[in-house]
Length: 106
Image (cartoon, rainbow, N blue to C red; front, top):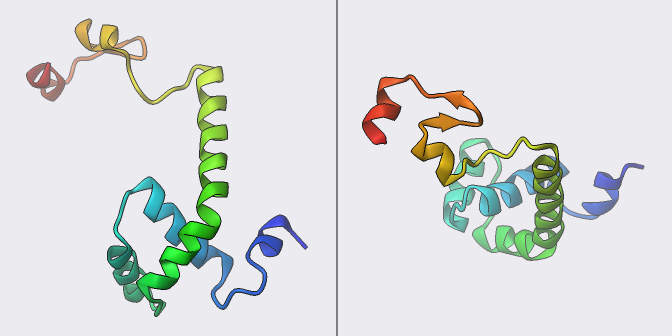
């Protein structure tokens, strides 16, 4: 039995549905009703209250995994955010910006 199955054991919905709902809530900052609607479009009927319970129960573990992943990215030097020095020099991660849109924004 894998860790995922142990984590979501005894719930009515599959682990993928629960993990997607929690991920959408925390990473995309969608509202509970928005997530309920997205799941309904995909054929899953679930209430916003159930999603709230999932986020309360599984949210801390999800946040811990995200922080651990981001920490390893920063340690490897592959952060997705650029410093203000990069913006001032019109570079992003050491690559000179040449697109027209980036020149208009900067």
